[in-house]
Length: 142
Image (cartoon, rainbow, N blue to C red; front, side):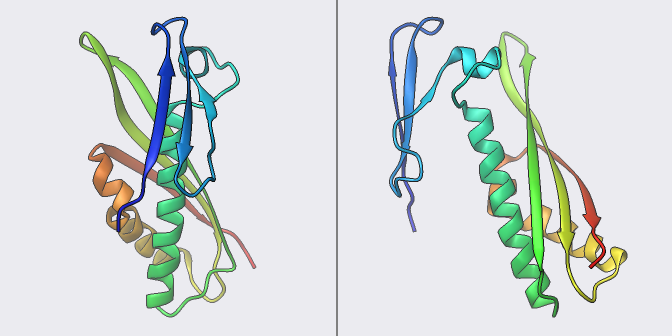
């Protein structure tokens, strides 16, 4: 399976702007730029997209692994916080922190934490990121 995304950039680094699109059309010429990346202005940025990819991939992996363990999740809500830091002469994405809140009937916190840890390590995006990944996994009462 191959999935595609594309980006167009016009202008200089500081004053330019771009658009991001996905082959599915979920993103179609969504704006991105320096001000959205470093100054909290409207628009998207690579770190936000990586965070969304990580959160969605983890949630799917957790659902799969819970199902394999005999549990059907009612809901899984995941937020990924991707950190961009100055490293040496440039910047690097140094970590991703997953905050998970899930409703899973019939599971206890220890088993939930165990399966969530397996999903954190086994999620394809986690593997691709190859950086420090931390997690808080909270099982919500039914």
